[in-house]
Amino acid sequence: MAVLAASLAPLAATAQSMTPMRGEVRSFTDAFAVRVFPGNPYDQRIRVEVHVYDQDFQPIDAEISPSTFLLAGQASRPVLVVVPFDGATDRKVRICTESIPFPGEQTQIRAQICGKFFGHRRS
Amino acid sequence: MKFLCAALTAAVLAACAGRTASAATGNVLFNGTITATCTLTVNSNGTMTVSSNLQSLSSHNAGGSAGSVQVDTTGGVSLSVDPVTTTTVPASDTTATTWTPTFATTGAQTIAETGTATALTVPGTSTVAVNLTGTKSGTNRFSAGGYQATVTVRCE
Image (cartoon, rainbow over all chains, first blue to last red; front, side, top):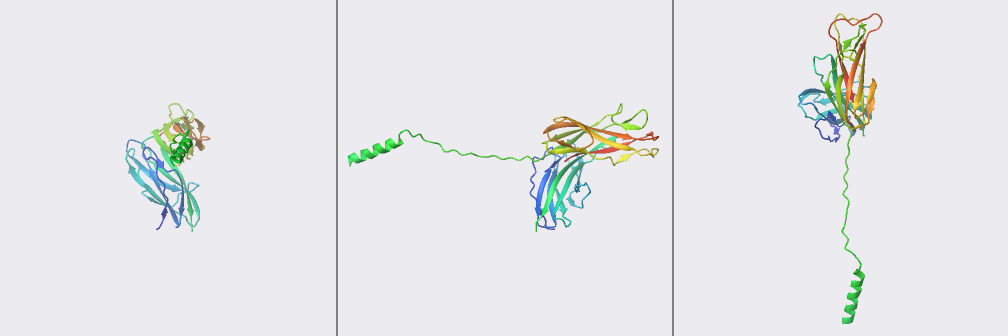
């Protein structure tokens, strides 16, 4: 699928949970793409999941590559997210990086960093 | 002719008199844009204890402890907690429980305990205390066994 990928340059990746957290993309196709960089601020390896939601936090069927991965301590890696317009001319989405909680505790905390991205379709 | 040359030289010298050599200057501009960033680091999970009337299971109760999360941000983001959807309760507990997550921050920005999304406008490092309370109403009571709940802390 031909997709116009936005040029969303990351800032310093070390100890950033996800960059960028804002973005606006113009696409001439039926989808738009965003490249985000989840980061691991911990010293140990963690499991990271990337999800895409709409404005009401309903999941969106986007292509996320990769959507789940292990990330070394103090490291980051690029994740490509391709979001379909689904017939709309504009679409606001949240791309969220979630860390998997430590197991075996009574009250687990799931950290979630969400970026807001706005896709415009151009004809 | 000699007089003419001397007169021209004198005229040029007179024209240059009082002028100082000027250096050329130029400004070099530097621009930088910092977009909103946020890092959440879970320092510790929380512990809930049951109240004496067995109707509250909370990190606020005696012996309980809040979870701790460090947030580093440039500002321009908001912090929130999601309603609790993932819980594990003992098989003997068959009655409904209302779970209420809350958070408060200290450090770069102080936020009084709340359950609603709050803007983080001050850049820097803050510590988030995450609390969770399970409540039973009427004649319902918490029962013996292990309880576990997951609270999602969101920075966006």
